[in-house]
Length: 202
Image (cartoon, rainbow, N blue to C red):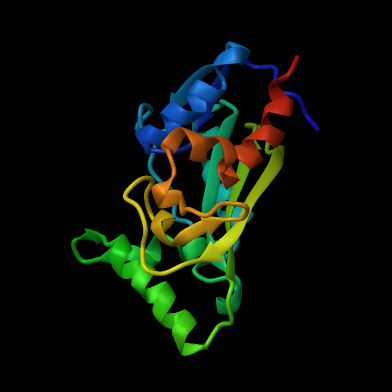
């Protein structure tokens, strides 16, 4: 595994919340963190059918454009009885002509599970893949998964996306009912990040 020896990391996201979360996690390593939005980088089209494929597109595009090592992630919900859907299209399932409608998308997931008469528990995983790419084309991949099940009706108003219908393994509440900071410590992103931080240890 290639070690990170630079002093600046570009996070290939235009999402301020995600940038803030990653910058906070990297505070112990004295690394300056900047975002793609701050550098006015365009968002590349995500044309792959896997989380790692789309994360690679974003990370390598940002590294090539800036000459900085770039970190990107791709994440989503994979429901077993639906063949892994919505998967890389998790956000797309919520798209409407006037923005994203996640309650609609959650209803779509449940409706599809009902249509196929999926047995209980209706298992699923939240998946996160980080790719750290260097300008010379090298990259390192770190994956994290949080197993759980899809429940109905929606529960809780914390978190975002599909959190109100996802009950993580070992818990009696959904991500939507869980304190944000507690969720951030156990989530799929946290699990991927635990592997990623090894690359920054000097």
